[in-house]
Length: 261
Length: 267
Image (cartoon, rainbow over all chains, first blue to last red; front, side, top):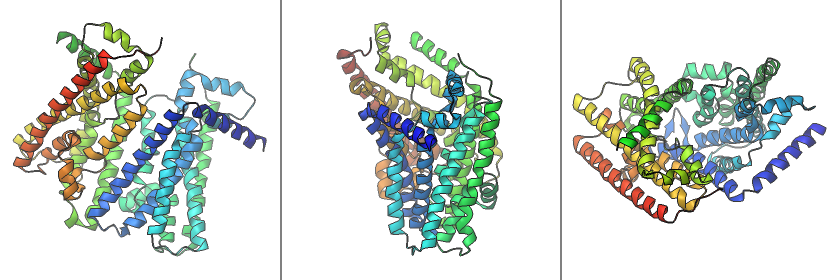
């Protein structure tokens, strides 16, 4: 309870801090909105030409795109501190965190709460509403639950990826850009149902990094392509991905040998 | 001219130092290109008749786009220039007997060139070994290849002059953030970085092709695999030259205006 209160306090400090630069905040938020709007336009114009992709129609893809965007925006808002963690290690700021009598994860999470992601979030919510209205899904309780599970599972998976990214900073600070493939790349290519990328890719995205568990399989359930309840629960199973990420982080903290000055 | 050449050399040598970053960039761009090709393959499988280019031309387009990303990515602007405008260090530059427009141009071209030199060859070589139609194909003919190189250089120049225009505009707005984001998003969309221009509906495309953004990557990448005819190639290169001249003129004019009424920030 105390931890949550402390975290909320961190959040409020961050927000107040950001509100000192209102124009800058507004512009960044608009920028975020525009960037993801481009992705939407890409989908829109592709479907002006094609009626479907591997059997998925425009509205179904839209639903898929918006769910992934929302998951990513949520994870990013919470775990953005981890994304900029390399700077923290480089400047030696992390040493400061280690000597404080508080959980280090909480402090890193609290160090940066990106409200500017509200632009992307807004985009996601608009798309989400549009996607739900346009898709001819007959919503039942189990489908709504599936959607909820997708959001939870997706946020956890993306957060775990941010964790891994940060944990790698303990071992090397150079060339970590390739991790963007797994975070930004997943958001970018998750706009289409992952099944379209071929069997091998789907296997990778099921068993190595569980993107398909939070996107493709539950989507099949929502779109009535599959009826087994198993597909509904898969996003929750994806949460297990957080365990290795956390272990890697713990291992990283243990072998951390200060840097910076 | 000599002083700008040394600015160029300095930047170029500096750009070549970032090798680990380049390696990471190569891996990222490789994964990105691969995923994109798989995406277009799915559309191709679904409805080959609606596909505006051949699949192998699309693959070539994407690999070239990844290999020469540093030439055309408008978001890779020089932060140092923006910083110098915001924190007032630009005052030192203004004291020097150089034109800041030309100096910025030399710097921008050099750093883009250095990035591309480090990254393009590994990507192109590996992509050449990927089986057709997913790898990069040979250019349509020797002539097409030469025109491709010419158009590539012109495209780089158009991109740089466009960025220069934004740097200069930052003199007027003080905070460059907003400008940067709006322009970057527009360029991404209109230049064919989001989806290649042939995938747009014909009416919209014919307008988009006239804009300066189409003179960046679109022209060169489409000439390579001859997905546009000879007349269109002539027109595309003509447009590139036109926009290069127009953007340079606009940039220089604005720069002169800005230098007259400049207010140096910071202290």
